[in-house]
Each structure stands twice: as C-alpha cells, then as structure tokens.
Image 1 (spheres, rainbow, N blue to C red):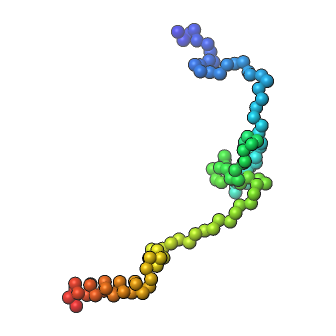
Image 2: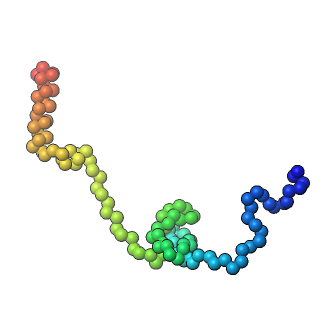
Length: 112
C-alpha cells in the first residue's frame, strides 16, 4: 500500500493550489529593542494597539517598543516586616501591657 501513496502528501494537508485574489488583513509593523540591544520586528493587525513591551525573541528578556510611550516609573513598595504589621494592629502602649502580662506569666511559671 505504501507504493500507492502520493509522495509529499499527508492526510489533512492544504491544497497545492494557491488561493488568489485574497485580501489579507491590514497590518502594522512594530520594532522592539531589548536591554541587550537586540532589535526585532513583530507584525500586528492594524486595528490592534501594539503593546509597550514584548519578550525578546533572542534571549527572552523584556523588550520595549521603539518610539513607544515612555515607561512610567514603578513605585517600589517597601517590604513590610512583621513589626510593621504588628504596629498596624496594636499601639505601643497595648504592646507594653501585653509584654508585662507575658513576663509576669513566665516568672510565675518559673517560680521566681
């Protein structure tokens, strides 16, 4: 049966006859550049707003749109420590009272 199959064909293959007079969607070409100075082009539909960042196709880092809007400065949040979270729930005076109670409890348990 293998000798009867057509060479270069497979089930589900596209027809070999090109479709003529087909109008393709309008496109825009956007150029991106990463921090390692890799430049590459990505095509988008004309009615789509191009993203300001895209993954670099060479090294996977974040690439910026050439001629795009400037990046807004990122507001870096300070890391919250357990002490900061505790101060959100209780005042210093409340903490001093709790500390005194716990110290009394520990001293009573030790027999001092």
